[in-house]
Image (cartoon, rainbow, N blue to C red):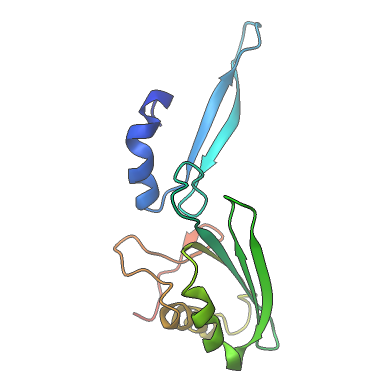
Length: 153
């Protein structure tokens, strides 16, 4: 952590490295004892409301059991959202749509039970095919907070 007056100095660096920054303020209660704190702001690489020069979107992909993809694009800056289903065989059509949007974060929802390695390979290859997986040293896919280490690189 660092003091709030240093936020403007460090915010863009932390967001560029893929970190989420949470600002916590002390609440003035007038009481003695432990100080109360509350979250006042959340900045993430896809939802940074400070940089309004260009709309950025969060992409959500849902993988169903019957090879149907649910695609959602959402911009926290203006509330604009787009939702549509795509069959796995028509997935290349999505790439043409995504070229028009600045994707900053991707949220994937899938059942990683049986055949999880096959599904992880499908997800990874899909993101590469859509040019959505960044070729940066700190790029990663996380599953509920745990980074996947067995990506087919």
